[in-house]
Length: 356
Image (cartoon, rainbow, N blue to C red):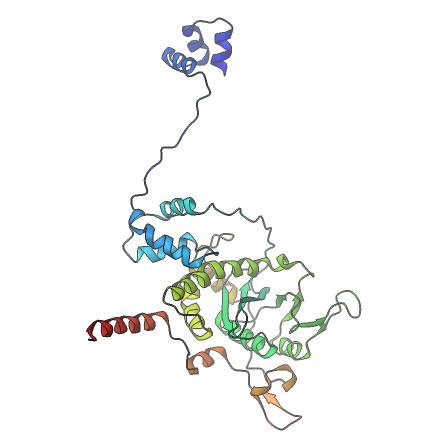
């Protein structure tokens, strides 16, 4: 712009070069261009990604209308011999679908051992329902997940007990939304005076934590677990369902719980968290010293748990809440891990080729 203005004032090329501080040839080239110079990045072929393009397209097609993140696909193709970096893969995936805008959520930090946020995630309804109990510690962001087939209060209590064992203790406060298995009616005797589910309130007193509720229609109050819920869906559920779909299989609760153990241990709690910039597992070691001790298994009345698990004298019934880990180990799965099915499919193909 300065070169153009000086030229219009009648200055020579040499005088303009002196004023601007560049070579005469630079002045000459700018005037010859007649437009403001614009940097254009040269398009480079993503050579290292090219051999894996069919696989990547097939995976995203199987997940449609959802989307598998680049971090998940990167782990998969590295196992197939991919030598490129994550940024190169992301550049290729951006060409398939534009990146979504970042959600500007402001989060409030809590002290170690102070808060746990709990939520249900609904993945499937109908004859074969599938839900996930999700719990995220406010300080460390360490998370626990368990897949279940119902959201009854007995199931909720079992999941809490397993979460406390997995996380190494009980926080002082737990934050919920307005789920009926926790609170039956809000503000019954004034602001903040809620009527809680009797069985769950008894369990909270047994464990020593205070029940805290989100403001109605304000799910972002528990934004840490809400954000984790999206991460769980994108990075665990969608890739796993897509892989099973390619094998004509459906995800069931036993398979989901087997797979989620490895995912939490090797991926979710070992990643560098976007907010804290620290691995949740590393922060968890610091937070565990501030957590309360895990209590013994709770024994409540029959109204607070699943009727089929009640034992004892009628009217004085007590329950033995099933510990999730024991249920998974003892259960006979109706669907095995994916590797088992892949092996069976390979045997079937071999048998079909040998048949006359």
